[in-house]
Length: 134
Image 1 (cartoon, rainbow, N blue to C red):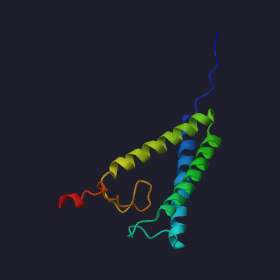
Image 2: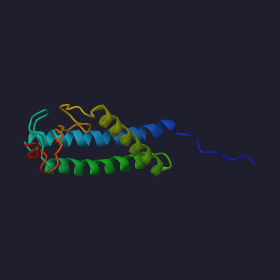
Image 3: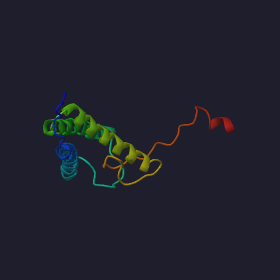
Image 4: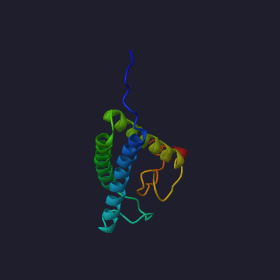
């Protein structure tokens, strides 16, 4: 018995994943730029760092843009749309890990997500630690 396999469309699969990733990146960077121009986000590298509420805002719209990018990947995929969307998510996760590792214990002007990084808080000693040395 001869089974017919559908033709592989590797180029179309790669294009779908790249298009979805590009859409997420462009939307994120564009929104960052608009919020900086509006004065909501501080200019790049400016101290003090952003507040927790602004980081929550950035996280919220980046989650939405990640979903939009995955939708674009799935719509453009020639077949198996969920697999393509998961590959795109895996690539995004890997890039995030690389960014976190590259900036670990550093204070670069930009964090792994492209927004100004926050300085880590100093460790808090145990209560009474300084007073007990008298």
